[in-house]
Image (cartoon, rainbow, N blue to C red; front, side):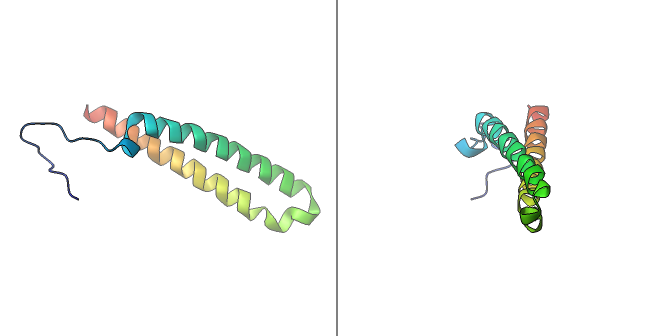
Length: 82
């Protein structure tokens, strides 16, 4: 559903999953996921049996960090517009 870019009489309503609180909560959770994945990379690279599986926590850490950066820029852009 497209929102009107220039509403005449009111401000557009932000969905609950895109609210500031939800974005900050997601950033907070993703920081813990990032830390968990980094610990997985450290433990996995220290054990010879798990060296071939280090790509998974590495990929998880990349995705969580990417999501944190993307949501942070969304919040920054939103605060600049207000």
